[in-house]
Image 1 (cartoon, rainbow, N blue to C red):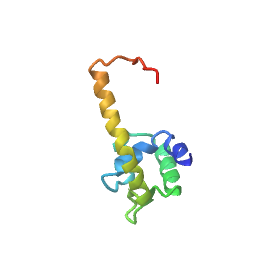
Image 2 (cartoon, one colour; image 1 turned 120 degrees about the horizontal axis):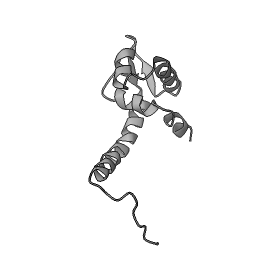
Image 3 (cartoon, rainbow, N blue to C red; image 1 turned 90 degrees about the vertical axis):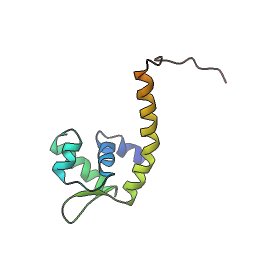
Image 4 (cartoon, rainbow, N blue to C red; image 1 turned 120 degrees about the vertical axis):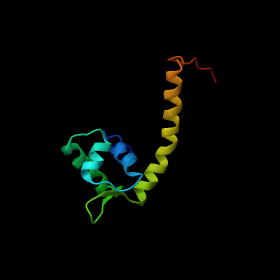
Length: 102
């Protein structure tokens, strides 16, 4: 459950998602994250570094660790589901489905 607490914090998953393509400096990462506030980004990066999900490279860029890469791989099915869900909403899929009793 610790992972759910960590990734449930606003922006944590977005940071992991943005770093999956490679290391980014602070400003570039902030821009990729819709210019989130600097203080929140610093706080989330600190939390993710303490959890060994993100590391800071010698050139000061931020990158995913092996654990961070594993977290990204775990997120991919959720991203696929999200695409399907968004497509269904765009197609006017009913807001609720009738459930069949089991």
